[in-house]
Image 1 (cartoon, helix red, strand yellow):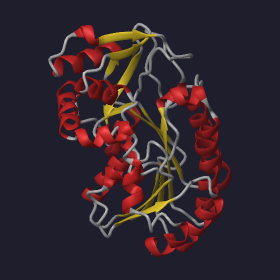
Image 2 (image 1 turned 135 degrees about the vertical axis):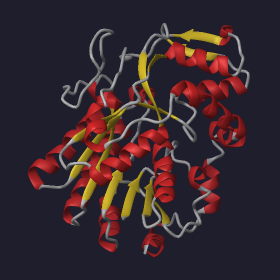
Image 3 (image 1 turned 90 degrees about the vertical axis):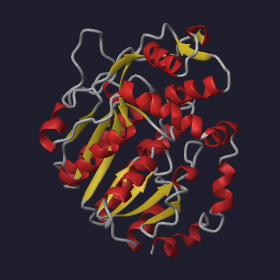
Image 4 (image 1 turned 120 degrees about the horizontal axis):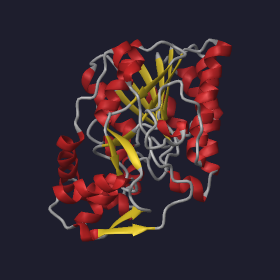
Length: 348
């Protein structure tokens, strides 16, 4: 299988690329990434020499680039991870979210349709469903979309666009909506890596509001396995929820990190809540379990210490990310390949 992975230098995308290349000897991956602040080629430095892997620098909203890329290569599938994804940033300025998450997805869908791509995987989020009350059942695939942040609204719009390309044009679209991921290579602005790295730097643990917002947590490798299952066996036009069946308050997550590091709870600092902060997410993943035989393998309480250990052992990685110097890495390592005029030679 030959796959175009967009946004493959980010947290989930890089883990997915590493996973599928390890699991499938005859899979080939082209990684297209704009390399915004969250894109980090160090995430894939270990597999960069693999002849089954190629990196292309570019923006999914660049119609000319996408058309040329798909004209020059035959892809069996596109897996669209590319997205602006941080809620706080979307509240500050929604423009990049509209440009990448909606316009970029539209460009990809048009190109996939024009070039006969056999599978289009739209990687989405449970945030499109909005918030749940404490006694409400978890979201199923039939739950109405009710996004409460500019980020979530942009992802919901992208999902709906993808859905229309299946129903109107017959493009074999698959949509997945996953709960909160944790694992290695996660950008340190997210809850778990932020708390771990703050602890390792001797900083306080900032917690929004009362800390009782609930999220459903899943290890990134369980997410990658689910995406693989959907790519191979999912029914076009369908939505598949992916969740870890692990609902925890933010405060419980933070306390688990403190316990793992043997640190006192006095490090917790409550800060003003962000606007429109959804109270609870929970995913019903029974559909993907029954239809595709997938189930999560990584238990949060067992694997959180492994994630903490990873950040301890990769201090230089996250320190470069926090300092911003990681962006110099790809400038040094890929100076020639970042030239758009070279992308055909790189891919072919």
